[in-house]
Every structure is written in C-alpha cells, then in structure tokens.
Amino acid sequence: MPEHLGHVIFITAAAAMGGFLFGYDSSVINGAVEAIRGRFDIGSEALAQVIAAALIGCAIGATTAGRIADRIGRIRCMQIAAVLFTISAIGSAVPFALWDLAMWRVLGGVAIGMASVIGPAYIAEVSPPAYRGRLASFQQAAIVVGIAVSQLVNWGILHLAGGDQRGTVAGLEAWQWMLGVMVVPAVLYGLLSLVIPESPRFLISVGRYDQARAVLAEVEGKDVDIDLRIDEIQEAMRREHRSTFRDLLGGRAGLLPIVWIGIGLSVFQQLVGINVIFYYSSSLWQSVGIDPSSSFFYSFTTSIINIIGTVIAMSLVDRIGRKPLALIGSAGMAVSLAVAAWAFSAKTGTGEDIRMPDTQGTVALVAAHSFVLFFALSWGVVVWVLLGEMFPNRIRAAALGVAASAQWVANWAITVSFPTLSDWNLSGAYVMYTIFAVLSIPFILKWVPETKGKSLEEMG
Image (tube, rainbow, N blue to C red):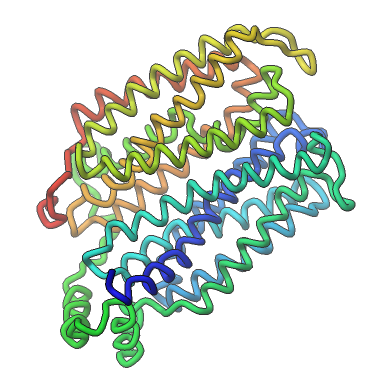
C-alpha cells in the first residue's frame, strides 16, 4: 500500500463522519416515537409531522450545501453541519413543547441534507483516481453504521431506564438521552474537520495554488506531477457546464425522458416503505404486541442486516451489473412485503391489549429482516450508483438535484402517512408497499439503462 494512502483513508473516514451522523440522526428517532406520543399526548397525525419534520430540513440542506461549499469551502460547510447537528441534539433532548421539538428536528435535517451532499463531493475531490470508487463507498458504509449504532445506543439506554422509554436516567427520560447522545459524534465530526485539508479543487477555484499543491502532494504521493494535476483540474473546471433546471426541459412530458427515469428510481426507492423500518420499527413491533425491550433489539438486528446487505451490494454492483441487482432486490422485496402483510393481518385487539399468534409474529420478524436485506443489497446502493452514472455530463448536476429532491419528498410522504395508515390497517399499508415493489420490476426492465462498464462520457 502506498505510504500516503493511509493518510487519505483517515481524511476520507473523517469526512464520512457526516455520513455516520446522517444515518444516526435519521434513525435515532425510532427509539423515541412512542415516548413522544405519550409525553405530549398527541395522535398519529401530529406524531407523524414531528417525525417527518427532519425531512423538510434535509431538502433545504441538500439544496443549499453545494452553493455554500463553492463559496466558503468544503471544510467550512462540514463545520456548519457539525454545529447544526450539535444544536439539534441538545434542543431535541430538552424540548419545551412539541413545536420546538419539531424545530430542532428540522435543524438536524438541514445538517443531514448538507452532510449528504458535502461528504461524497469532498471524498471524490481528495481521492487519488485509482482508489476513488472504493473510497467513495465510505459514505454509504458510514450511513448504515450510523443507523446501526443509533439503534444499539437506544437499546442500551432503554435497559438503563428499566425497559421504559419514559423511565428516568440521571434526571432525564430515556428518550431524551436517546436524542441527546448525538452530541458526541457531532462534536467529534467538528473536531475532525479541523485537522483535515481543504479540497484541492476548491483551493484552485479561489486561486490558492500553493495550498492546493501541498494538499495534492499529501493525498496523491510524491511521484505525481503536481503542476500537471493542477492543469488537469483547471481544464476540467473550464470545460464544466453548470447545468440548470432549464437544461432538463424537453420531451413530451416536460422533462427529458432520462430525468423522469431518475425521478422514478428515487421515488420507487422510497415507496416500498424502507424508511418505515428505520423510523418506526420499534413502534411497529410494539403495535403487534412485542415488548419494548425486544422491539428495540429487533430494530438493532435489522440495522445489522442493512450493513450486511450494503457490503453484498458493494461487492456485486460492478460484477453482475446494476439492472440485474435491482431486479433481484425488487423480487425479494415484493415477496418479503407480501409475507409481512399476511402476517400483520392476524393482529387482534386494540390499545395496550394487542396480540398476534406466535407463528405470524415470527413470520413478520423474518419477513421484515428479509425485506431490509433485499433492499440493502440492491436499491439501497444501486439507485445512487445509477443516478451518478446515467445522466449525460451536461445535465448531471441539475438532474441529480431534481432526483434527490424527489427522493426526500417521497420519503416525507411515506413517513408522514405511516402512523395513520397503520392505525387504519397495518396489513393494508404493507399491501401498498408490496404493490410498489412489484411495479418497480417492469419499470426497471423497460426504462432503466444498464451503466455497468460504460464511461461517463458515453452517457451523452
């Protein structure tokens, strides 16, 4: 291994802390859902608005991060996100009322949105070309590890509080600790951002060539012709066309067909209901009669399955191609969701007195884990790979922005509707998600292009 590569890995891992916080903050609320319902005495609709509030912030953060990073630098953008994560964690832990809890959630969402954009961009800009693909996967890996750690922390805090989400630990209720512990990784992210270098691409864009030379020597090694690399970066920046929304217009349906395909991929990724598992699984298992401590444990095990599936996808996506992997995932998700819908149909009772036959309870747990595995080894990774590859160069940035926005909107729609849907008919909600998983199969077969083995220039 080249001697400079260890340093590059450290820089990449530090930047990927934003991804860790993205995953952590997105799913930590899972452990607090029922406690928030009880603490503020609210119904499913108001609860859903608080849970989904972060997604409004996500859309704002993702939209503004690129401009902020171009103006004041990638590192400063990371530091702003770290500060927002910290403030959000403290505010969410000690809210005065429901409205300010929602406000702190929105603020945390802005940080998530910023981290989702700035992490991959910075990693791509500091990675040596030969290692860029593997280093870029740090962000996705960090997200799924963040999800798993948040569930493990929630489970540990619940045990300290005697299995009660509203049990007190050192003067605060358990759910408050769950939301507040994020201060630790948020501060660590801020500290790490103080010791990693600014992106050479940004330094060149603002005329700080000596610093850019030093960073390039640091990350690409002493054998590289630094002046040649600076010339290459400048030439690439000169040739770059800043795509705008206007470039996406055309075709019979307003937008170019390839843009609609990108939106379709983003929307299907959310409409199968994956984030119901990450935002509501503890609440979901309690709603079918599983005790809180066990429900938290199952939330953690689904997070581990999510990591395993992501590793499988990262190892297969270049071998078997994007479309075959997506099709395998769609078929597996459709079967898993259909089985879960059948199992949930056996739920009986209301309120505190909910029961489910042992057989169906076990089947529901297996089906939920199977669903997460098939999602993680396919759509969880493949959609981001396809969105990064399938658009022509001249519209890539703008088309990615539109597709990512569609994803946040679909995520919000699923998140905000689930509590009401599950009150109405939990099995019916899962039938809906099954239908979307089935519909994704003809969508992939007919419209999604295979990008495996093609250069980005060939997508024009």
